[in-house]
Length: 319
Ligand SMILES: Nc1ncnc2c1ncn2[C@@H]1O[C@H](COP(=O)(O)OP(=O)(O)OP(=O)(O)O)[C@@H](O)[C@H]1O
Ligand SMILES: Cc1ncc(COP(=O)(O)O)c(N)n1
Image (cartoon, rainbow, N blue to C red; front, side, top):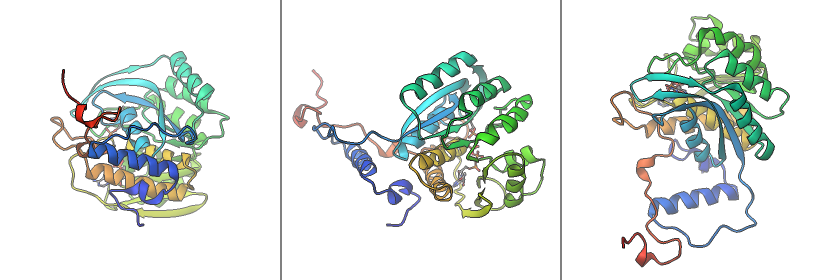
């Protein structure tokens, strides 16, 4: 079966865990629930971790990452480093978590739920970056660093004095970094739209792999440069006013695919399909501003209508 933009991940992954996940999703969409519990012999799910900030509007950040992890069939965990008071119009306030609480979240996760891959998103300050880098150093886990700098609404999500720490402390730990075109240009000081050239400059700055995403500029391509190899991934550009969270969704999907054991190039292709599908189902008109992407296509889903105890006739009846 060929992957499609509507069914990017399930089209490629035909393992048992993913088949079961897609069965459950289609059951839920049909309003039916199987009364039998899962078999005790079913393998534990693959785990992925996002270290990022909360978007109170539910469009980007941690909220988008967890949806993308679920879409890719992995269990999502989160260490929240800052909270934003945010909606589709803008970011009204940012509240940083204290470093010791960030470390407490990471310790709790690593002690019991070691992730198969990690992504970082909005890290906001030098103090947070230093804390996160210290916790990640020496861990042999694939790491996607999304250098989130400016929100699509225009708000600054990385302080200017924190850019140096991001480059010096986190880039060397990353398997791949995923700047959009403007972030890649800002980080390198290059004005060019040549993603291959910019990616090489970012590798020279210490990143092992670079994926410059394709949502902006003249060329509709994600460009990957890793292990000395360049790869252009053509991507669609849907005319949808709902791309808030596209970058978060893309980097979370990339981390999920690495967690599933895919090589970086294949994971990058899958992530492009997941992000495009999320934009295609974007929630235009959700608020007054540009809507968020929707990687789960929630408008196609319904709560179950049959009883888990197996008596459909009584399901949902008010007493
Ligand atoms: N209009 C679109 N149609 C289809 N795919 C898109 C669109 N916009 C973004 N994408 C996909 O989403 C991913 C991230 O895109 P982009 O380069 O816009 O990152 P970003 O600017 O960080 O996203 P964000 O909108 O969250 O700021 C890319 O793989 C890109 O191709
Ligand atoms: C918490 C958080 N993380 C990331 C983004 C970037 O997403 P976008 O560029 O789509 O606004 C955001 N707006 N908020």
